[in-house]
Image (spheres, rainbow, N blue to C red):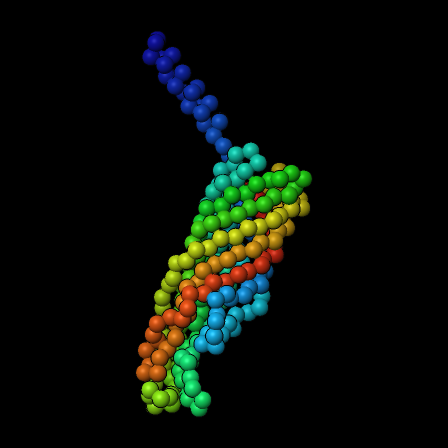
Length: 221
């Protein structure tokens, strides 16, 4: 009999503990993004990215009253660059075209401030996956003169990433909340590859970062 009451007590305690667990909540956001590349200090690297890009991110976390704390992941349409070695007057130097695919991972917090307004912030890392290619071309420089074959390379960088957002709940239903938001994000993308006169894609340029403004809609459930 005592064992039966012990089992009942343990079951009730477990049920109560489970009921006290804070709820799990998710948020998905999509938007359009305008970006600029920071850190370009000379003419060796040119930003040829589209002026308007798409972006998607999601947060999954635990709700504590007005606060949601969890993890965040985000992706965006790629950034594009071209790069060349420094050339003197009259030289013909190689050109390299790079496509950067940024992926954000980090911790995030969302605070409901009241009246349907919320603010969020995230801090973590940006994984920049870089695909660089250079076509076959003729080079005529001080160091080398002749034809070089096409080549390509793949690499990735991991750098600091962070951002903040301000949102307003437009619609609230039993199925979730729909909001409009504006966000500012800073993503480290590292260096952009540059092909040297002899043919291989060599050392990267200065470490760069991407600063973005995103406007979009979010759904919380």
